[in-house]
Amino acid sequence: MLKKTLLAACSVVIIGCGGGSDGSSVAVESTDGEVSCGNMPEMACTYPLEKLRSNIQFIHDPAQVGIKERYTVFVDMYGQDKLGNSSEIKLPYDHRFELLVDGISYPLKQGPHQIIFLAEDVPVDGQTYEISWFKGDVLVESNAIQSLAKSVKVAIDLNASNEMQLWVLNWQNGYTYEVNHISVDCLDQNNTRVRYDAIGNTEALLETDQMMLSLSENYGLDYSKLVNDFKTCELGMMVRAHKKIEPRDPINKMSIKSYTELFIGQKLF
Image (cartoon, rainbow, N blue to C red; front, side):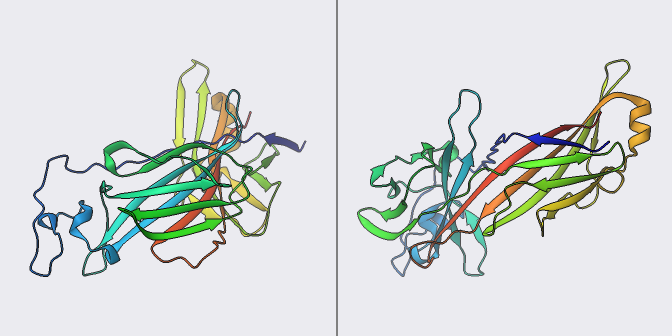
């Protein structure tokens, strides 16, 4: 019998904060007048302004029990060396970012290890989201967007076999959808938990609103054997929807992205 299970959105945001040396460095003036910081790649003053870039991410957090729907905004910066290689840098104190939603300010505070600015509880019903980058009191770049990522809704058709069908119920043009296969977690007759990680290419782009999932191809497992060996098994995967951003002005030094994530914990039996 074909069984369709509607999955509620549950956003899981994981931030990887790369470490850097916390020791101090001496900033020195080079012969061309640029501050070099001893050429330490993690220091912003190693790079002239034209070699600095910033990334802004609006990550959609769906409503959950006790948590309202919102955006969390992250800003980090990169410096580009003479070979074109980019390094994440510590945020310099003379740089700042301002976020306005329909004219109301939402402060961006410096996050862990000086590598991100962070704003939480940013409303999802704004008409205009404007972000500006300043060095001191000088405007480096400003831009605005009017449409950001919203929740992705997914269903899975189960038919007691190795093959399953995933559907994106609110598929929209202007989004890129991807699936990240994670694991199958099972519980045996002795209540021992066993985890099977995904194999091969664990990420896949969705070209349409539906996609076939395979226990054998994606996890190296057989449904009948799982039923025989375990009391219960659950499939774990992530679906991410990236919104195509249409900024007010052409992007120069400040890229803007927005996406939402849905973690799926689907019981197989």
